[in-house]
Image (tube, rainbow, N blue to C red; front, side, top):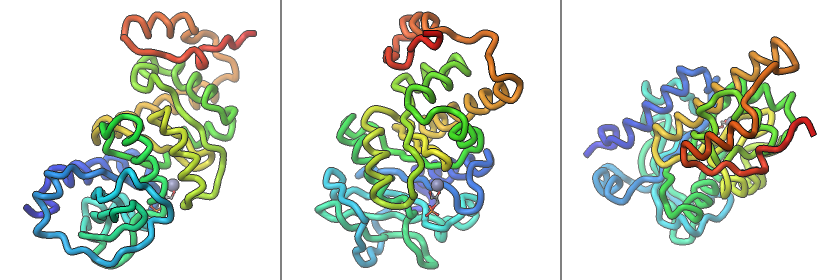
Length: 276
Ligand code: 13P
Ligand code: ZN
């Protein structure tokens, strides 16, 4: 089968284009990766031609020999559906999880996203935490969430609670909460380590003054998670634009009732008393 005809590649392209249409990917902003299933890579193997090994810039031993579909550095989400072979690639990891090689794509040269260490370390954190259920890591630059990183305290507790309050579905969509990484230089191992540490507990990590990382089992769930977080942030930006004080909101007791009825566990550390 041709790589571009494979369903996982079609879903990857649709997700990237959906993100572009949301306005989350100015210029080359954002990146997307997918851990390919063994049967999916077998189906397209005839089209693969491995190039030379290159260092990942970190080590992910649990992901040795895995294949990933991933956007290229400096490539525009705008172009993913228009020029797919130029915009993303399939990479294979070596048997130590220290090097990668491009097996398909990026036909005009280039390398995987500069956030490759963060993508792979997040994939590894999820792989070790939930036994390989998650396959998608998605990084975007949604404006409302970024705006909130200038006004809310940069804590997991503040972001989780404030975003939960803005839409009743939020605690059901991200019951584990949201992690926050303080401002750091992007693109290296250090920010990858900080993010993947948060990904052990959360499916969402916010990078202060930069963007969001989401993890999920498939493209729909991961995109839906990003969309839900950003929609909630948009509502909070609107509320804060009208008034610094909410007249009413969902109270901790409401979240506890919701947790019971929807069968989710909402950690008490996010249900702190704001009036104390
Ligand atoms: P890349 O073009 O290298 O993927 O970088 C975009 C980005 O969002 C960096 O955080
Ligand atoms: Zn970014």
